[in-house]
Image (tube, rainbow, N blue to C red; front, side, top):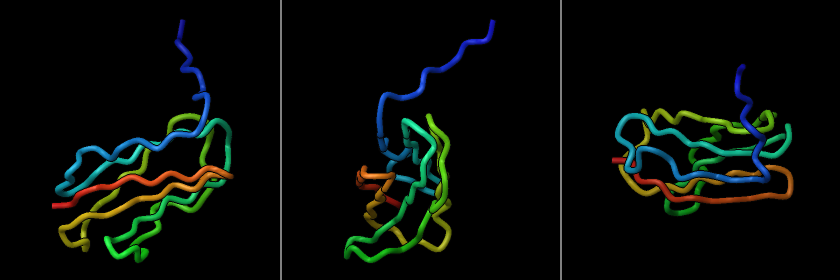
Length: 94
């Protein structure tokens, strides 16, 4: 019998992996229901660098791959907005 993963109880934004990222890094997040999400990347000055996702995400675990092509080495912040929830994490690209 196939196992069914339970839906997450709430909203969560995980630390990107690998961190520091060299060529590509993975960002995972969870939402408790299908909803519109926006995942945005900012530089150290707080300037928006890239919108990684601005769309409807299904309930459960979601993954976004960031290819750092064109992004210089440095410290960045990524922010996930989903409904009333907002979370921010720091990442290093080198």
